Image 1 (cartoon, rainbow, N blue to C red):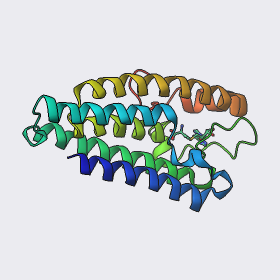
Image 2 (tube, rainbow, N blue to C red):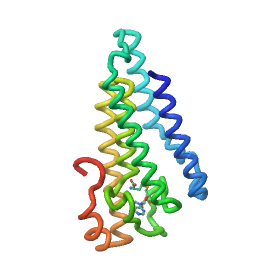
Image 3 (tube, rainbow, N blue to C red):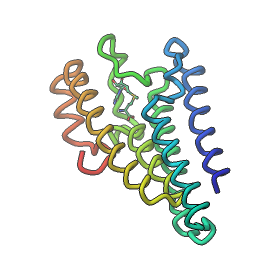
Image 4 (cartoon, helix red, strand yellow):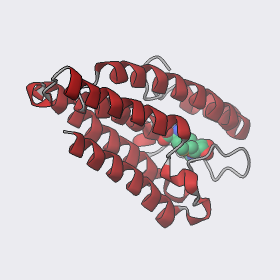
Length: 184
Ligand SMILES: C[S@@+](CC[C@H](N)C(=O)[O-])C[C@H]1O[C@@H](n2cnc3c(N)ncnc32)[C@H](O)[C@@H]1O
């Protein structure tokens, strides 16, 4: 099972890097891999939880078929939603929150349904990886911590968008379109 987790992790990070290389080359940096220290620590914790359960509690991941299946559905759905958002923004996409020279607000395609598809997709993907590993503690921790992370990030990002687009962003977009993450 852990092998599938590694494949999922590798696919996600390589595809993020490739996207930046192709669409936003000027943005390319180490952060394009999305491998920050807190994130790497969370993945290390999840790995430890998985192997501790296998070695010390005799967990057999093959007994948790439905949990793994739901995990895979979350992972695939999350990747599709995130990448659809990224491709819709194209060269306007950035892993950073732009505070000046904003390239223009996009409200078409998936952005007409969800305000933050890239965050929504990543949120689903994070939870999916822990369901795939059948990791109860990490699943709860990932859900709570990533929810808090995206709540703060969305607040900050939308403050900057209000600064750029004012009433147009607030009334014509934010008030009408769902953020993509529950209770935000
Ligand atoms: C990591 S991307 C995330 C985009 C969006 N929050 C999402 O989840 O799909 C962050 C950059 O996208 C920009 N951005 C966010 N929403 C946008 C939109 N509707 N149109 C154009 N740029 C947007 C932000 O200004 C920021 O520089």
